[in-house]
Length: 161
Length: 174
Image (cartoon, rainbow over all chains, first blue to last red):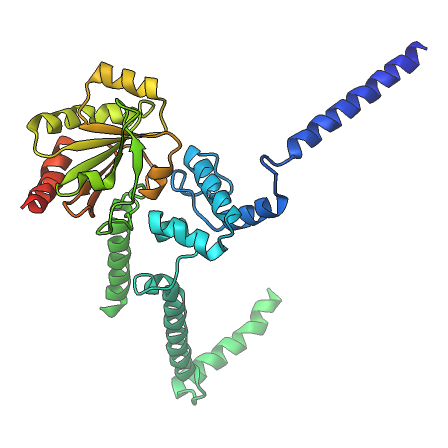
């Protein structure tokens, strides 16, 4: 009997822990799971201004909370993602976007990697051509032939030792 | 000779980029609101909550909007500068009391002094978001037509006021 009681206690504990864990999993303010999902997806793309290396979705800063509230409200009003992003950019600038738009100011940012790639290709091409012309077939001079023969003649001798 | 000049040139470019890049302050995000009309607000005044103030009430003169809160540590740091500015009487300073409790804000002003012509209560931080506030304190210079002309992020300093803000104000007051 004592054993059964203990066993039941363990089960009760396990159930309690499980339900506690599940309770923690529940997202806050999940009145509208579709909207929350949309918010989470969009917030991944937006930068928190307080802790600059965190996205708006991850950040626990007060301002990030407020901004999520604002975005939630805009979405509830039926605003598109584009309009929500514009709302934030108008106030905080392109800085909130992890993917800044292509503008004259950001041309170097977007084009930079391709410029570097082009420079790399040109440098490699020049290098290969130079090396090619250096190692192209050409006859050995008399002196070089003698040196090569001497080296070849040496080799078996070395094997003996 | 070019064998040495090319790497040296590349190194110089790298140093140049690092010198400029590391000298920038990543916490200062340029505001897109500069040279744009100040966002509209209609907020209750801290001392007279039954009376609200709008941006239109301040048309026709140059004014400062200083975002502050009693919980903000750097606000204490800049507070003497604001007191000096208020005493000089060159420009009216309006406070935006950001995400604060009224009694805390009133106690704070009681303790340190009140440099503000009036403080506006932005309890839920909505107007702060409209102004792109992300780190209190922040200070905006707004011209006679209600256009934001300058934004200072972080605590005001005596040098900052003398070198940046006062010249801007003088220019706008003409």
